[in-house]
Image (tube, rainbow, N blue to C red; front, top):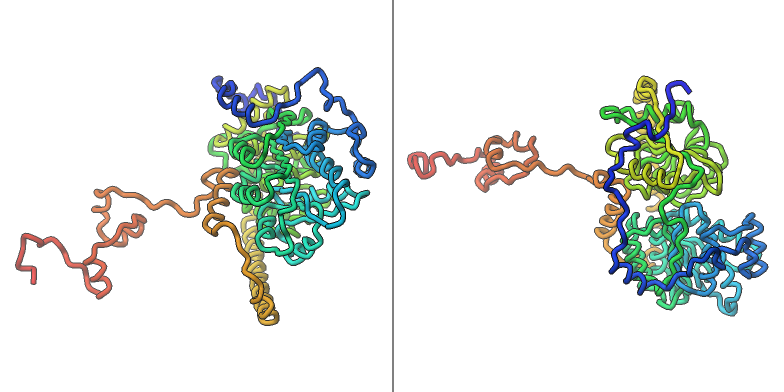
Length: 575
């Protein structure tokens, strides 16, 4: 391909430069003893354990309706995480599960839940199971999988996620569905404010993608849920990575859990090819040119492009459209309907590119994704694993390409080191600077059209907000008595606490620079302050130090401040 060529990682110092002192350390003896005391003993590893020997779902002694549901979605052989989880979950034990993305974790906990619910008392409808997911998309996806698996049963489901009507969800909760699939925020909202919803009857709690929920600032929400629902429950926690915060959550919310680790070494899929495009110092401003070249000439279909910032993803989507590339976007600034439509359009092949933030990096299962492109490297190796895990799923081949500059070196080195350790295929893709420059120039030529589109979108957004306020006012007048009679909705933390949690989550995902809202005031020494005599200079410097009392009073009275030159010396000038 003109303008681009590949070479092995050994040919590129950027990809291969790894410090020799990054060696794995032995686990601390004291910590190992604590873990041994806290966790239930794991099954002894023999040449082939009883769980590993089960090669079909029929060997789990599941009920016929469950087996029919599994056959209906073409699930014939259990994956490693399913082989280990299902027998333990059927015993009612707490579980801590860890497996790579795309390993079938959803079915691993849904199948034993459905099997247990088949034998529930049916005289009084009761909500017995809560499944918590970090994002709306994952909750909707889990809901779809669970309802398909339960096709031949009478088990009922409900999804509680943002972006949908609270009133409609309250009406569904009145019917006491057996399984509730929710995001933490909306679950707490109903838990505190919906009279028809009680958590006292919950018997099973599932926390899926726990590390992602903690990264997104849901730690306080999870603690609130864990301390409110019955302690006699069964809890199943699944996390792709076991961080310190996840470990704390495990110790607070689980009782003698069984650890089930499947490929917990942070490995990528064996059939994934990882490529890296290096941006030399001073070339960071041409990053968009590299992306456009890759999407126009190399990877032309079924591509997910990941961005750190929502604003950048939106701007690039507009540029793609102006250049004739069919693309959809997926990020948190979109409404729920828009997000669902974007995923469906990409899944159905109506668009070739999905431009997304890390909202789509966890658990979202879209079949046939051929390539993942990182517009810039993510903040951590764990997030990198989740991004590239959107391709090469279920035994298929895939490719991941990362456009990396010098600030991305740490994550790139970690990815290369992990890939080499597992024998993964790693290569460096060389893009000729002149080619990238030409595409960057094309993007710059579209600057006026881009600003015009952004301006139109801003006007449309403002108009929609005005219409919404008008509709809100009309509803207030029409239903005033009913609205005023409703109890005020409550929350367990203040707005300040919520902002702090969101800021913490943004820092985890995108680094500290992403959450700086204002520039720090310039700090000047006393010597420098004395040099900035007039108020105009002080204002421009942004020093922010107060004027003296005399200066403030004279400014109010419209007088010039009195000089202190003669103080203590020239008494003639004093009255």
